[in-house]
Amino acid sequence: MSTAPTGTTNPRRTAGTRTTASRTTGTRQHTVVDSPYGPLTLVATDSVLSGLYMTGQRHRPPEESFGERVGPEEEPFPEVARQLAAYFAGELTTFDLPLRLEGTDFQRSVWAQLVRIPYGETWSYGRLATELGKPGASRAVGLANGKNPIGIIVPCHRVIGASGAMTGYGGGLDRKERLLAFESGGRTAGPQALF
Image (cartoon, rainbow, N blue to C red; front, side, top):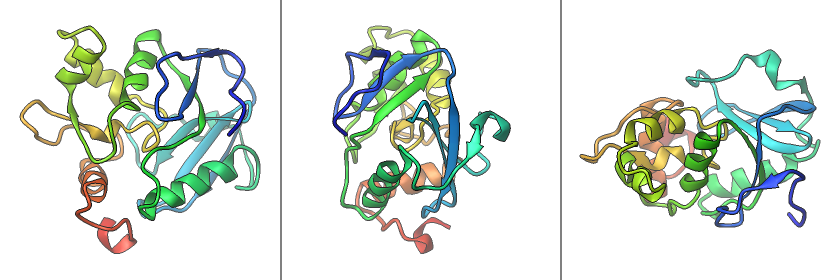
């Protein structure tokens, strides 16, 4: 996409993902798209993606906070859906979308680091904290990671425990394991592999 959203753009963006730091809400709308992981609710604030939520996701805001439900042809949803489809087909490893990440300064700094984790790789919460310059903050990093409002695109599923163990994931550990297996080439993203 050729234009960055209005507001303060996060200077730590990588891999083409543009983020707008914001704590205020604007005009919201949402749509639902199918995925190998079940329906995904996409939320936009002022026509910029601000949420991607799975069914049954922990920390999923109430439905009424998503704004009016619109068709998937409304901006910015067509490009989001196109890139998600390419990701699930194994054709896209890096998203290039403007994002509006709403949270505290610390949460947004954690989410900005998440997009730096390469496709097919994982980082521990400790490494993520170290990358933030806060090596003793792995627990706080984990809490911020769990409240990521834009799952998959901001890849919080790529963060694991220091021992390599699967740890919490808002979309459920089963989905996290399957996302990581998919990204490492272990499975396809077809429904048979995910449910």
